[in-house]
Each structure stands twice: as C-alpha cells, then as structure tokens.
Image (cartoon, rainbow, N blue to C red):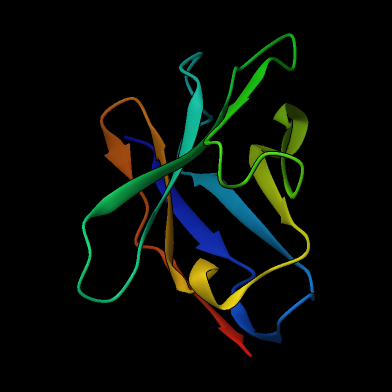
Amino acid sequence: QVQLIESGGGLVQAGGSLRLSCLASGRTFSTNPTDWFRQAPGKGLEYVASIMYTGGFTNYADYVKGRFTASRDNAKDTVYLQMNRLQPEDTAVYLCKSGPVWGQGTQVTVSS
C-alpha cells in the first residue's frame, strides 16, 4: 500500500513562502486526485486544495486562491503545494491525501 510522506514545513515570517512536498512511498500514486488539508490548533480539518493525477486540473479553497499553487511530478511520485504570501492564520499541520491514504502531516508556522 502507498504511504504518503509530507515535508517542507517550517517557520516563516508573514509574507513569506514555503513549498510542501507529498511523496508517495512504497507504491506510486494511484490515479486518484491528491488533496491537501490543514488543521490549525484547536480547529477541525480544513480543505486546502486538490490536483488531478493527469491533466493538471486543480481546485482551491477560497482563502488560498491566488496564494497557493498545487502541482505534481508523477515521474517522481511527488505532489507539491507552493504557498506564497503566508499569513499567521495559515499556521497549521498540513496533510496530503490520496484516495483513502493520509500522510502524517507537516507543521507550518507563520509568525507575525
């Protein structure tokens, strides 16, 4: 079964950027789309973005449109989330999901 491994989180100042990666380990991604979610402290899971396996079609939550960009490199079994103009309210654990499989998450902290 595929395992998803996120990386790229960290501490950044408001207005800064980070690029998250989601690597499919063990087996390649299925043809499912890959989704990004986030969970802030004390809050529920929140949808961020999706990218289809082929064709590059993407979808974003309104609060990240124009700031976040999802992309993928199927040859590298990796999906990316480029996050620009980060704000303190973007602070959360970011998780990727493909079909029924979830990654463990990577922490993003944005300081004001």
